[in-house]
Image (cartoon, rainbow, N blue to C red):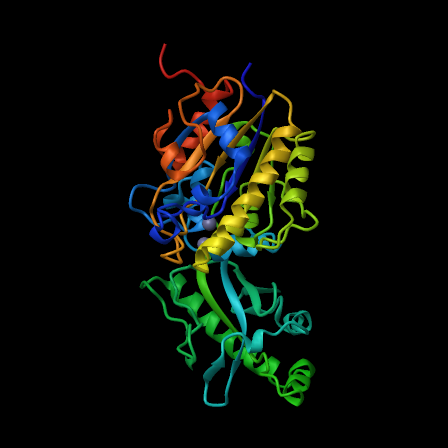
Length: 410
Ligand code: ZN
Ligand code: ZN
């Protein structure tokens, strides 16, 4: 009998390149991973291009593909996913930005893009601006961690074809500009520029900022926006593929994607989306979620962070901790549960960013056609029975494996 329930684990940025200085190994090869190796030996493996060969994926576009969506149709920018990830209920057509509390001087020069990484008082600041209506467009402002905010424009006749108000470095404010000739883009710029001016006016003498100035800290006296995106219409994963899914995910961007895919995304105590995340707590939550759901989607962010930091050992130890969590999962599931383990992209230590190198993939459970792969790493899985796939192939292959696929033809 093929599995009727699935745990689908994405190890963020886990794949890498061979490092000469580390004995011609990748962090995944160097890591001690007895549990994933044994799953590879008992399952079927392959190598995967999350979007396509040579295309460097973002975590967002890659996750869309892994969940069976076409990122080229659904993705207009990171803003909406980030906004959904911090709990904002978005409507299709909302224009969402990522934002920062920042410091601007009297001459309009941004002197600190993060307002000294402000931690306290941001809720009170956001309250002053959240819900204002400018030219018929409602502006929703929600504060995220530290200096981060999300900014949403809601109303008719707006567009995401606009530039950032964030100058991205210490520089003069440029103002938002339209990227096409549409009335909607022009209107969006007007609203955003008016909002920026309003934020300066409202925040200037706010008690939180008066106190910050007194304490010698840079005031949070402007809201900067970047990464405009239109909230897409995403058919729920449950409807498209016939699963009852849940996501065990810490990091806001991926929480947002899962939310917009119609998945339940609970908070798991100890799951931080950082290297300090409690991976065992996540594994326990995933196994527990199988009682009510038949598809448990997991993301563990930690290996990506080691990759961005260019820290081989940090990445390797994150992978070893993932392997322990995988060991817990394997020991606590019954034979009707299948496992998929992969990554959303490579984040090679020497690159310190995402690369287009393909990622390893394994499927374990009854009904898979096993191959000769005995270890879970980039080189070994390239010899596997799944060959070289794209991210968008995973959901159809899963459907066939578990007998949910329809026959094409007679
Ligand atoms: Zn990623
Ligand atoms: Zn990354």
